[in-house]
Length: 303
Ligand code: ATP
Image (spheres, rainbow, N blue to C red):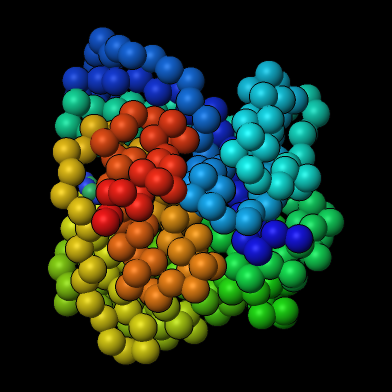
């Protein structure tokens, strides 16, 4: 049984580099078109596996060639893929991603096979969740499955880490089962009603999430790092300064790396620095899973 269970999405990322994002009705020429493995769940799972975590992945892929090949790629990255299901007559989830010359991205996704991650599938893997130390989830798969997984984890003391992305409002019943939440600024605002613009507003947003029963709130602030709030005390832990090429999967790399470090018994602060290092390397590279660094690279970078 794996120490970390990641439950989440798998997508084929169709990536195009663009000079700027097209306005409605505008056509622009892009270049460097690539199809790259992505999906928030898969990115976080691959990050954790590549950085040395003992991880099992609960996910659904389509029965297209991408879905068939990606299971083997996950296995090569060292994760347990026995709970990666193949949904028949359905394509793997897709993301259409534009990356601008400034390194920002604009993304449109279609869930497809990810919608197959139902409560029935989650139930089949209840024991894996119960026996893990951490359960890491995002919001690109059906909410009912996420809620069930959280309740199975909560009942057995498995720590629930929720990266509430993409941004959406969530029931208080789910938030009350979360131990650590890792929203970015937009997601923090959607969940708390407080616009996050600086440390003071991050503290307010974090307090609103503590009030919903979440012990640890970590708001990621892009190149500025994270705002960490625990038991009423909060602080910014800055990230590393790098030249960003493509921030796709920065948050995913951060989350996978962060939980990997926690699993190893690192302190919250050290786990964040480790995750900052992994995410900083990832933004200097193109693509989602293609940008996730190895353990050696991260250790060398943060040394
Ligand atoms: P994405 O959706 O692009 O994957 P996100 O919005 O979920 O990312 P961010 O808050 O942008 O998450 O970034 C997460 C972490 O990635 C940051 O806390 C930081 O460690 C790292 N990071 C992001 N952007 C940069 C950057 N330009 N330079 C260095 N580190 C970065």
